[in-house]
Amino acid sequence: MPLTEPHDDRTSPEEPVVGAPGAGEEPSTTVEPEPTLPEPVRQRIVTLTAAVLPGLPADEVPVPLRRVAKFAPNRRARLGAPVIAAQLTADPLFRQRVTARVLADAGDLGAAVVEGTAPAAADPVEVAALAYLARPRGWRELIDASGEAVRAEADSAVVAELVREAEQRATRAEHDRAVARVEADKLRDELARVREELGQLREEARQLARTLRETQARERKATELLATERGRAARAAADADAELRRARARLAEAEAAAGVARASAKEARSVDDARLWLLLETIGQAAVGLRRELALDPVDTLPADFVADAFADQPGAAPAGAATRARDTDDPARLDQLLALPRAHLVVDGYNVTKRGFGEMSLEQQRKRLITGLGGIAAQTGDEVTVVFDGAERIHGLPPAPRGVRVLFSRKGETADELIRRLVRAEPAGRPVVVVSSDREVADGVRRHGAYPLGADSLLRRLARS
Image (cartoon, rainbow, N blue to C red; front, side):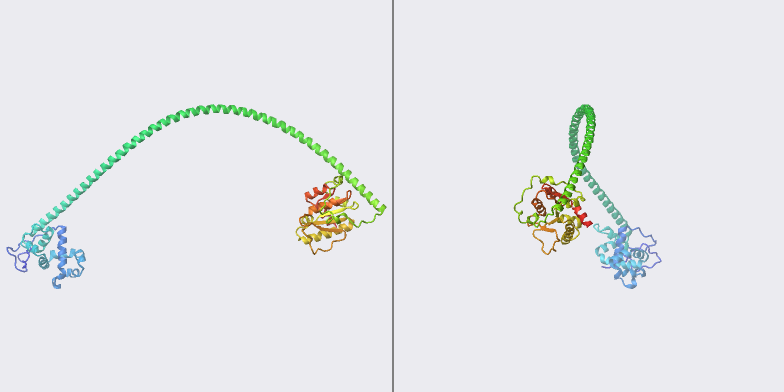
């Protein structure tokens, strides 16, 4: 399509015009200022120029735009917009070269704009951009019309937005009204429920007030009864205290009387003990004298020698008067007095004495030490000495017992306590038998058969003096 040279209103009569003027164009005699372009039109002009800029020969591109022409298409219109707009305004020749290419690309729309007419259905922004570049006769009116159309479109968009917002507000208001109606219904139901509950609470409050009054009346009666009972309790407590004081006084009198009785009994017991030991000493001295006077031969067979055999299965009963020949005593000093009696028999609970005196030793050492000490006592007094140990069978490897000391072990199923009691029962009536053991059961058992029980400490102290 042949291109008509664009009309430039700013061309002066003295300035030469490149190319022939279009049909019906007249040379411009005045320079008019550039029109104010709407922003969409300005952006479209820059976009069209940036699109054709790389296709121009290098010598036809202004120096400021040669660097911009090398940009990528999306950066060329965005970053080079100020420079492109300035060159289009300042360089008419450059604008004509750009216009020729833009009109060629625009086709029929470009031809219509050059002729000064624009289709009614054409985009006003595109028409204004092509009119600015081609500048046919009446191009300013096209730009103004485009601005009016852009503004009208913007106003229409604003009005449409306002209408849309109004519709949305109306929709929201209708929704809010519906929600409000639902909430109002709920509130009315809640109010009715609250009123009903309030009525129930008022009724309950009246009942509680009536109950409170009744309770307060009962409380006053209970307080009066409590005061009465407290008075009675105080009187009863006073009576009880008086009775307690009288009982304490009687108890003190009884304790004083008991103390006097205990003192009298102790004094009588001391007198009896003194008489008993005086009698024993007299009998002992008489026995020693009779022994020297009669010069009795020693006895070869002793009752304890037959206990393990003759009395193992036939435990005899104690004589009727045997209980009178022994008295309970824990005085260790009397051991020597008892051993001084003629034909005395000393029976020792072996392990009861050794574990009390030297329990840190082994059992073998305990037995050896005790048997050795008893040998010394037998040698000094000439009395019969028997030591009894627990044991299911006789322990082998024992050293020979010293002269005058008999060592016995309880049989299987029998304890040393039982063997000691059999030894005591086997002795004839009237013979002094001394049993050394701290076991209360042993002491009580032999005392019933007439033996003299002494604690283990008496023998240990006697051995310590040897």
